[in-house]
Image (cartoon, rainbow, N blue to C red; front, top):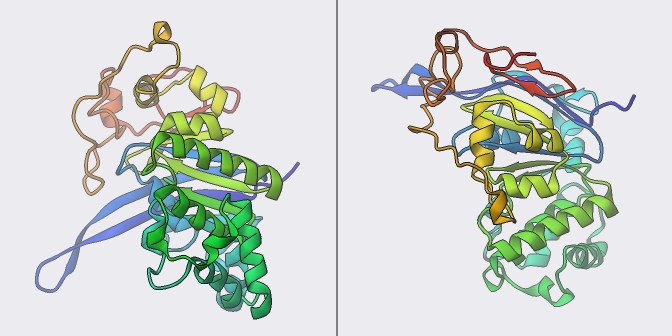
Length: 323
């Protein structure tokens, strides 16, 4: 049996709350609270949820842009948090991250070609005289023209900048790409182009994706597995088709009810959640969703639901789902 390319076990990331003159720690923000997931080679795993659910923190913790509090992050069986020094430096090109705002990660004073090629030099993956040719090759793969190599970031549209962000990651020949809301700031037509680019690169480069998004309609088109997060925890996880056809958790059902359908007569009944997502600094007792769930019982308010297999690899954390 093929082993997962990425496996996350009981991952937690807590941020301290400091107050007072001496900045003593008075509490914790539980941004990620006991997350488990597996991504097989060549798959696209979609991680969805509202803003504040912790999905972006999961991505940043996996690539060690922020340190974990507890848990394991295994890449091809190797715990990334046990790799240090030169070994970690050699491993980093194999896992790349694409951000929501590509302009924020580009130096406005550096030409795009230099911004894309600098990682090759930093990691010693190409000689200086080879850089330009490699950059031109990856620009073409990402749908950009050769003359773009000498332009500056402000000369590009939002969609083009996202292609540049993808090119910066792709030039290192990664095995895993973590895309954090890569199309949420783009027009719908441009979103479709970028999604098609992700698909094309997966086919030609053999890439594996962790795709983070709040838009389930985008996830439906791109992902093979989907995990739904709420307030730092995973509430449901299944294959794309299973989750979209047979959602089990009330939160997932509410999210899916907001997804537009192409045929008006098949319009879903809209489920409106009451209230706002609670603060991760003071999460509710029991099931974290019970304060907004219309079906909550006393058990939901008092007991944390187990994240279990409801059948056929469809996992859910809900007291109301009977196996």
